[in-house]
Image (cartoon, rainbow, N blue to C red; front, side):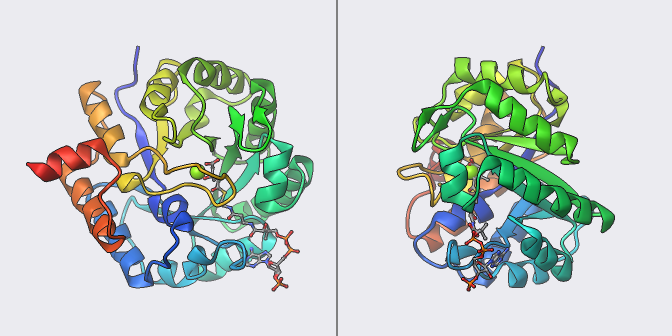
Length: 298
Ligand code: HMG
Ligand code: MG
């Protein structure tokens, strides 16, 4: 049967805002994060320590992290592509980081300028150093069904990369449908392949909603035993290296789905909608969430 409870990892401030054309003010990022944690979010990505030439939107990550209050039960996380990123994370006092690999060679080159094997070799010492500092490490695999440059990606390749990251010490592996082109049958095949290398309870689904498949893919993942999902409030997001990709599935929509399935998320939907409307107003566009639109019209 389906789980009683799932964990939602809010990625809008990182995955969402990294893809915005405007530079969102640091104070607005901090206010958004505080609104999200007030709505019950306990796991939240707040930025990334990557090259500011590659992703200028995340250049203020250190100021964002320094501006956040300590909240019991709340884990703020940042993406780190290499040792340099980890060092910045540690200096800033981060307690959780994420490394990010891909299941497609072409995407790995475009996103982090190295091969899959080189990236895994680079992450080994990063994960080790993080763990020595008592910092939790999450691992990402991008292009888990489809690559924007080369098309279909075999589930076995995804499972291999996921298994490698888990073996190196990542506590959870987030499986990214970067293009959003995958559907529920491919999702199940991919999750089931990964679950042969990594305990299914250590897998998370990260679905972009470009083709409107994200909720269907989440349901398929639930049926395969996945209990953690990434989402972006107001459907913020995309990927600078995945042309045409739109945002992650909206957190509001995932929470509504879970309510309908009687699955606990610990989140307050009206407060989430308010948080989404706050950043959408700043970005001067409506929230990209069906549920936010319905509840805001009431
Ligand atoms: P590189 O050019 O191969 O690395 O880039 P390098 O070591 O030769 O350094 C190049 C320059 O970057 C140097 O500066 C370094 O100092 C600097 P310069 O001398 O030219 O002035 N640099 C750094 N600066 C700040 N922080 C650092 C850092 N490292 C080097 N940590 C690199 C390699 C990985 C750095 C680069 O490719 C990069 O920053 N990539 C970022 C990619 C990224 O952030 N992508 C988006 C996140 S992944 C994603 O969205 C997918 C996900 O959502 C899941 C899904 O949906 O699939 C997670
Ligand atoms: Mg993503």
